[in-house]
Length: 302
Image (tube, rainbow, N blue to C red):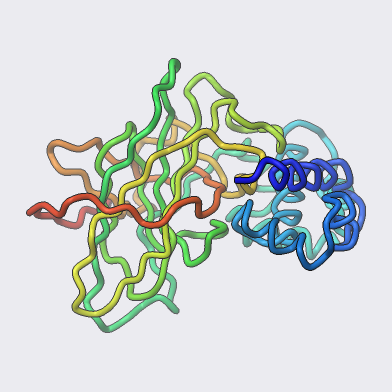
């Protein structure tokens, strides 16, 4: 990416963070980037994968997550501090993006099970679903990686419940079963084992957060799905914030309320039953590995 563009977009992201409680218009953002409004929208989308407005909304919710855990401010006070005039609107947006209400997020300390493997009614289809699989690789991390979330979303910005997801305990093979027909984005996220993942600074970069993405991946009837591989990379300040709620290793124990869509072969890493949060964007097209004969089976926790 052009260094001038990256610097301009970075200035806007800094301005967003410094003015989360204020109403920031597209004109304000373009002025901070020192580009025309029309040109700014295009370069911001190209640099981050999403629009300026969606990025700002994600930053506000991420800061709200931090304040819920790091302060004793009320939900109403936090909603006003991050730019919402209505606490009802704030709570609704928080729930739809993070998966639980602000008060529940605070009560659980930011760690909560994320149901994997369930399909929303609008994603149900009478056509036989597909299986998506591939390899997750990662750079060397001295402290090691924590849990690795792998999820399939209908959008480049992962919000709400994933269509399918699984959690790996280490890099390696993943598998998502019963993937409905449609166009999806594969997104992955992990945190270094020595980093506190609960209260990240929204402007942190290169400090233990790792992400990866590919897509769009289109699932069509009677079409063989090629393997989709992901390589995790350090998160940068141009990546949208993490929104989905986290799960810690203590949450790895079984739960009869959770169904995992991830199944590991005998040579692959075990999959957990919960999904931690992930925030990211499309950085590269789908990369496929050489197809290999393999068998799979669906596994659920009772």
